[in-house]
Image (tube, rainbow, N blue to C red; front, side, top):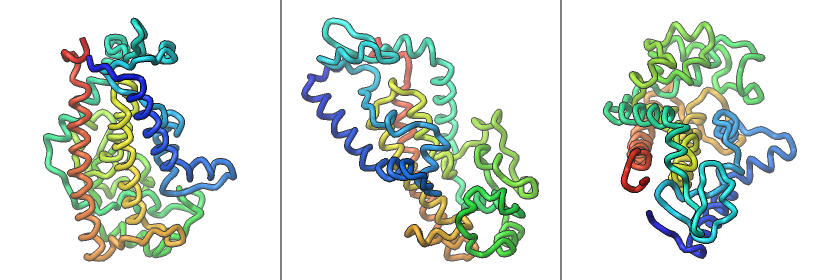
Length: 288
């Protein structure tokens, strides 16, 4: 058990909170006046983890904090002899099935090579032959217009492997996907080249809070933000007004640019997967 003196861990907590404040300031400002952002809002609305939750710093399992009596009433914490720490045994008892699922999913994903030929067409399939009311980001124009967007989908080979992207395909687009991902088959199909799988590392971190340390969760959040930007730059929407130059995946140059970025994100997301697996190896001497 590592013990952190009070000045040390409080400084870390303050640094973490300041970093989160900087990353989430735009989200909080927009919420105050009802504005929406098609890129940045996704991580809060889809993943449903609030800035205030991300802001709260946790040391993770196997670390005790001196002088942290206020944490005695926090979920999955225990306080004794002037030390607060995550009650790992209680967490494992309550959330053991979630730990097992995440461990199995990440291990399976790491065992597979990444595939880099999807070119972000999932966002195009979500608006294929859609009415204005069905388009998720209807306040933003389609770069190629409805007909041009549909043509890109019809001429492409769609190979989306992620169920949580595939389930938003329009009814007309779903049969065009060469794969048929399901929730039940997620562990068998997940692969590290998928942008959504890379963003999901953030989800697995916060779902295992406070067992997982907040520095890892914040690193995963930062990566998810970058991935989301790529995701929407390659999407059919024209977001130049927001400063996002499109990646024109309807061209050979655009597809090459997208695949190169996808490969880099695959490597970084795999690094985070390994770090997360290292933190959830339960039981472990660090958790005794």
